[in-house]
Length: 331
Image (cartoon, rainbow, N blue to C red; front, side):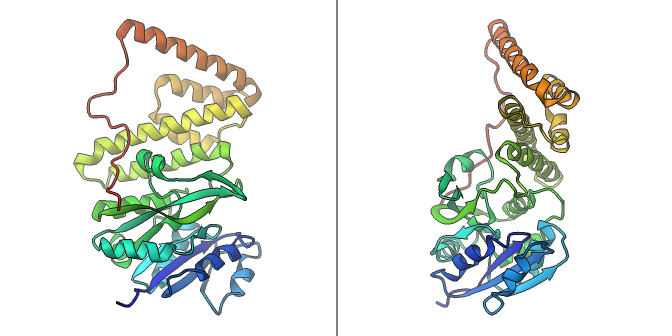
């Protein structure tokens, strides 16, 4: 059987120093039938010049800066492949990535999304060697290079959302998962790069950003999901809000990193009154003052919870409240 055409869509914005390594990882694929589309999102560094150097091997689209959603959607519109593989312009595919993904997709022809495993790295340092715990907790695809989308699914769900925040991909996966089965397998297909200058931010900033963006996705999902799934989506809003809040507090207390007000404002409405009090405290006082106060507040809340447990017994989750999202079947 002829290998189906796979379109590799690579949005690029100011990643000229990484793009050659990314493209070389695509050129080195063991899978022969590829279409490589690089979409430059109005870069102001040498990204466009670097991409033009590969014009004999890629399709290059040049656009004014519009953000990730419209840029990736432009690549989807141009793509002719039976399958779409989304790759960030600073990440790297393993040599057999496309072959692995297509083989899984062909064995599961009803799937609207195929998700593989991968590692997160920073230079020679491996930060995360497996997706398993992430799959248990939340979105299994930590970077677009781990996914393969059949063209039929992409056509069915339409373009990526155009919101300025950084969770367009998660929104896209949820829209696919609402209409198609998702297949997850454990074979490594990509490596993604930790960059403190990326849209995710530094290690101290990114969890609050991710949580706030996820809250936005889940809020949209509440208006779209089946009625029987609304309790789960609402519960995940509360989970993500608290995760972002806790990480923001830890960043202030340990490294003095002030939380970004815009992201804190997104999660605050979904917190308890005690946590909203701390949010107001963080907004009202300088970080240098908030650090010792926050440590004292944490100690106070810890004592309060211990006293509450003695009086009322262990605090239990509400019946039916999930501890995490359902995990799709693995290949």
